[in-house]
Image (cartoon, rainbow, N blue to C red; front, side, top):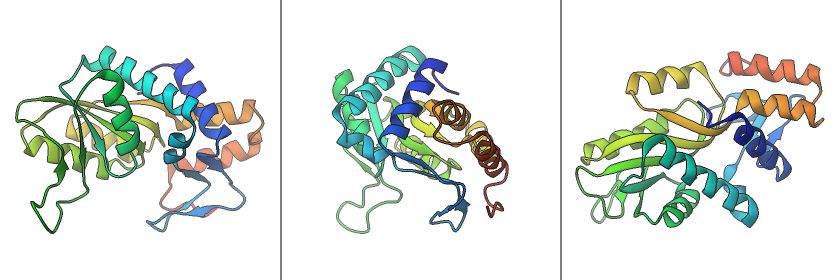
Length: 213
């Protein structure tokens, strides 16, 4: 679920302006999974643009408190959401931890880095939601450490049905600043893509694993 329509449109426009999101249905990208995709999203670029990272930080902070109440801790999912998660925690005056994909193989073998106490309320910050699997692994690690996960916020989601199902099964509330449908509507309105290209991009969202462009 997006926080609201105005935020979704503003966020989508900013991501397109700085090329954090690239739309190229005629020359698709190849993801690490092997999927062909007419869109590529790298939200880490936000950190290089102070006015945009401040907008994202403040929108996250405002909506976290509105949707979940003020948590005890903000947790970022490594590695893409460490930077923005830390900015949100700083803005809200809260402790910050981050969650690795898996425990370290050396030292204390931590999966969660930072100070976290059992029973603390946590909101998880993520940069991008595709299938949701890696994001929900972070949630599971926090729960295993005794945290009470209030929910997750993310900058952008592709809106795949599999992700919606995964979050529903895990009983985790997900709220995002922007999503795929608002992005495409804005991209057409601002002439980043044509209406014909929008149809191609919508077809990809329905079946991303089999789409071949």
